[in-house]
Length: 238
Image 1 (cartoon, rainbow, N blue to C red):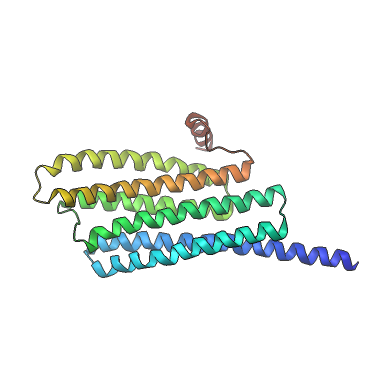
Image 2: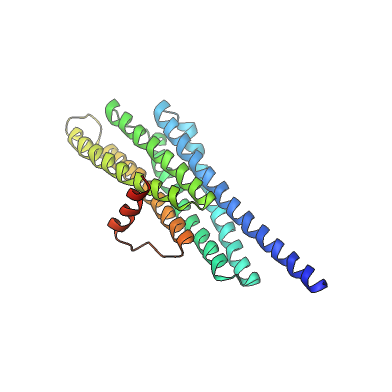
């Protein structure tokens, strides 16, 4: 009886550790999502102070990644998890790397404001903010799918990246055409182009996490699955 009680206690502790680990990832994701929201607001209102706050907060996100990664290693070493639990822990380890990289991309975008390199063209600025809103929605959907380990939701969010890529390419073409007609320096334009690229990359990072969710729930690694196969899954859901 004592051994049964002890095993139950250990199992309960392990489940709590896994739950805390998942919650830590969602907290980290929430921090990065707020960073993007604040960055878009800083661009919209030309607020260098808010942009500087975003840049400084990236240090907090970096610290969270290291803490979660250390906890993953500790749990693996101490608990010797089963295959399914190990898959969850490895998914978390990969996801936090993508989330940290999102923070790096957001920091680059925020520097547009601190360096006073916001697009002078209102149409480019407006389109950038519009793509930013789409990326924010994709990020929110990604973390929601991760929280619920919902394959269906992950596939639907995954598909949103195609629209973001399409909008990004259109804006890139338009921006390149505006460069020769604008009074802004070439240095400014390069910063703007990098910021646009950063928005697109955040979408790619979200897509990665959605792939992890699908792999976790299905037990199959879909990272190198043909796009047509994943697209068929998405089409079957709609």
